[in-house]
Image (cartoon, rainbow, N blue to C red; front, side, top):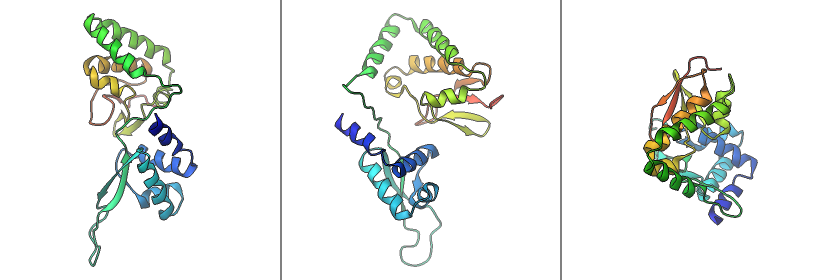
Length: 208
């Protein structure tokens, strides 16, 4: 809990939050120069805040070449880059463990062979959330982090990742039903898993 509080506190600074939001939104490794330019700050200041975010466990650090090798000493040396940390952060006071309860309920659904009923409930919940033309905003509000990828809309984040790792078939099927309900007739949702992202993607037909 203390580590999670420290991580949230690290985002209080507006420059640090802007850098974090930018790195997360890219879905790839981001260098210091790029992050600094986007946030409108110096490279030195960006490096300081990015390293602080990494110390708080919100970003992970790697090294890679961002440009072609240059002649001379140091040419082509790998640069420090940042990407979102894989570990999830959650703060509730006092502590609540909703993920554990969700995992237990998923086990019950599985044991009772009530998968179809669970998907029907998820679909109904999605339909209640549907707003014509506003499905992308609803997905953003619920933490899916949608982004355009060619002719599709993909989701960088799975809000149910911890439970999905324990009960992937049930949770992914329910998530698909929920997403179909949210999109309504504005887009077609289908299972389209990619490493590190949500298992659902959408056609971009009729997106606004």
